[in-house]
Length: 306
Length: 330
Image 1 (cartoon, rainbow over the protein chains, first blue to last red):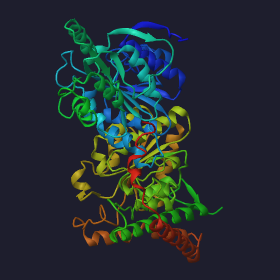
Image 2: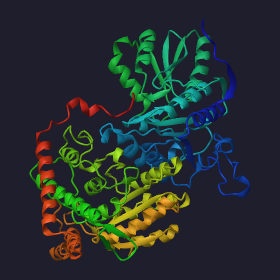
Image 3: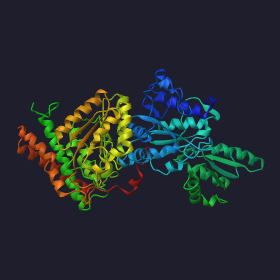
């Protein structure tokens, strides 16, 4: 007998907040740090209240529940607090840091890729760095050149970093829980345009395993690998194409590192065609990476160029 | 109990003094042999030696336990030894052998032992400063009573991480002691050129934390200043910045021709060798004899000789090790 998990309709943003709340309840070493994640620090009437709860409200309400010792507002000091999160993770905490926009990675990349991501390797397997860095990606809010990037391919390129990129509220909750519980450094990419989108989200504290793609739509004619907000765009396109008699299968990798290449190859072996929809810059991207992977390992299954 | 008074605030007993002498000698012999074996082609990669600066690492770390954390620099061997990292494992690590403390994957520049609270030498100048803040955040959050000591050089004092780290530690009142080892040169560039401050400790005032300059060749001076800063951090009274004016007897890296320093300058500092000075101070106080020191020196040389023999005989990591330890799970 299959036991159905109860679900509720909630937004992507609410699902993320719920995952943070669950993780903080289940593990006292989980703490959040970032710029204005509560906001209004040291303001008398906000001692146990938040001003913002994050620039887009994702962490709103948590300071009332967990207090300012576990919801740490930071100065605007990305190298400082991302590095502190890495150092704290290496010494016994399980921090969740918020890098407000991924575009700011230039201010703190050393602490991510040269420090936290490499400790385990450089220290001969004797260290772990269980930090999760949540960050916003994507265009669509007319935020211009320095607040609209994706850049997840940059992090996927780097050994020691796991990259998680949910497209739905349910995935956001389950993947964030797994990311926080994971013992490696995880970059968690939240698409700012998806925050208001709604979906069914399971109750409970079940995580979704990292490295497992999700087939968002089954089809027979063409495989579309879509990432983050592009999943919704691809689903809409698939509906249009269905009216024209083209049956599209949509694969959402959900994590880029590790990448569930098996699900992608299996799908291409079934449909014999592959389209990759990626919002990131095209050169050296997830799109080119997945195309190369399929060309390398699934070339004989293709009936058309990728 | 035999004690040596420093300038007044702290007392160190005979056993502790001799232990400090032994640690400093271990560092010196370790570095001299590392240099020699690097020249012989036995040590791969880049090697930066700490000889001359021993009083800083030992003056500070002799007051720490495994419950305390340190972050280090590219010149990290001395910090490791002072923090109690296994010396045989360190020698093997320098050689890139599988018996190394990091299985040969860190080498000189990333040598670490998290269990000893040693969070790694660091190939990035200033890279350890935010990490020390994080380690201190752990100590504070978990209430362990531990502190984090952050070693960095004069060159790092111009990195953004220095300023970000001091500010963060100050506003969060973190139990950190920032220890600037000012050896006069950032690589080949003199501090008088690269730094706007005549004393880097002056920069503490910008963050409204204590800033103290000490003679980094005088282990007593370092000990005393560190004692106060560590106590302050343990009490929950927040971070401090110590600047130890010191000197490196070797170049920036092995192979450096050191054209930017005069031999007169080097000789002047060698006359103030911190190990010889400590030995003289102990003798002057009648706490040990030449025989005591000779026994220690012999023990240290034996330890290091044995370590090199064992490391030379050990195996390199298997090729497949190049792809392990990247993730905990994947």
